[in-house]
Length: 487
Ligand code: CS2
Image 1 (cartoon, rainbow, N blue to C red):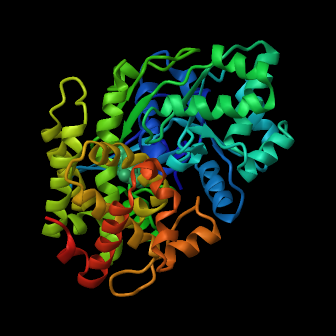
Image 2 (cartoon, rainbow, N blue to C red; image 1 turned 180 degrees about the vertical axis):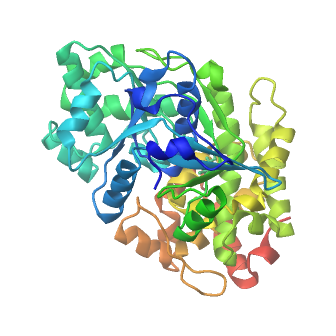
């Protein structure tokens, strides 16, 4: 097992923290300690901690879920005193392995809620960060408002001092902070959302307003919500994957991690209570973040979703395998060239055609073995976040809509939950209820097109377009994905 003591005798091919991990204190509280967070914010924080005078920027992770899996994860983090190894893998298969030391504590909120709230209110906490997934912000795409009717939000609103949701925790923590006179801080979203900071503000202030109008106002005045674009492909790690990573590193790590060697973070420099010296470790500060966010989400994440829907139907497991299918490669390329790039504003100094080429080569990295199922999970929320702007632009500008119509049909087929060969797909759709899942699986086109996946552009769906989607879906069923792609 990986421990402080073990850091003294790491295998030769593994780099360890060059700073004294025990001197690091917690200045960041992070909700949602998944693999992406550990390979992205966790990576940057580890790099920052190696610089002088940064030891106050360690991270305390918070898990909100109860249950066996979450308990096990918490136990493993604690057993390893927050240490974990990251294997970065380049397209040619070369690797770099490093033990990360930024995660200084881990709290299981359902077991120790008061500890979490006290930490959020603590003067030393300067940043509350989160990776709570695209659908996790509880925003109604049609009205753009925070949903106060969500059952768990309703429960928190009925007893705001004993929260369960991230909104309840953060807002109650901020209430205590204000009462203690500890001032505001930064709430920093690390999720793939367009304007993730603005969306967070809407969500947290929306919740706060329902608790206490004055508190909501205090938050608006004292808390900042920087927008950011985050990027690093981080596959899931199965138990076999863990064994392989440990074999390669020579470590006995309970939570080893793999990612590509590419990493990018562009963020607004709006930190209410100070921040780590991120600019010294490769983070880009910009006041034009939205152009980066849009390019990344509309190009990388949107084509990822197409690849994963096609891959699931084809019964393929890995992203590089799907892209190796020529019609799929061609379709994604065409979609980016003809539908996305012409309707997208390039970030300063970025050539979108080159950006596209880099993405396609990142997706083809065999050594990563990135999973189709990972990306296809929560496709309903992802489509709303990743596809909306492109679909809206294509439909409202009267451009050739054959490809986006096909994408919608592909998504409907994925949500039906059957591969081309009729095998059952285990859907992971945490934001669909039983009735919606039933509609998705049915052959009832009207019921499936009513699913929230299409909410971002529902107002633009004419009966004619709906008919085209229904037809495209029939063609996928008759001919299969590869023969039906409009390329
Ligand atoms: C993926 C992302 O889950 C998904 O939908 O597209 O996790 C993707 O790997 C990251 O955003 C890359 O930065």
